[in-house]
Length: 132
Image (cartoon, rainbow, N blue to C red; front, side, top):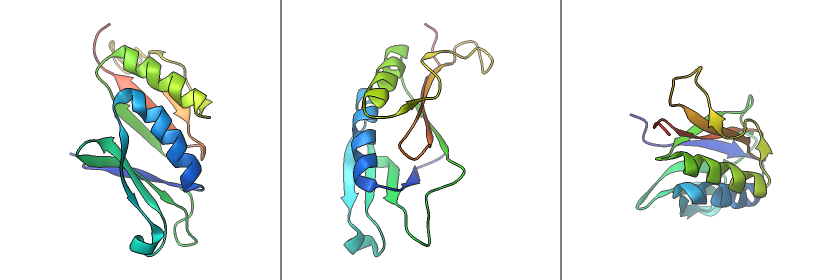
């Protein structure tokens, strides 16, 4: 079981704003902010459902540049309305469309997802596996 994951971003403040807005409709919020003074290298922001963050962003450094190729991260949600809300919030926050909300029956009959590219090109998805 995966406990947490994250992506490296070019601009922590810009990505913090994007993810705070995009993930709010699925119940995620900023739960931790750890400055470079503590990590020794870069600012780190943790998002999730209280009490523990499970999705992290960290600023790029010379030793750890922005991940290329971009990563894909999918957030499982409970219903299709949350997929739709995620997509619209992410687009309004500056994300780029990479697949509007809708069924993806080639994955399985109940797969309903939406894909948005974050400011660094990471493919961020919200997906529901429940029947309509």
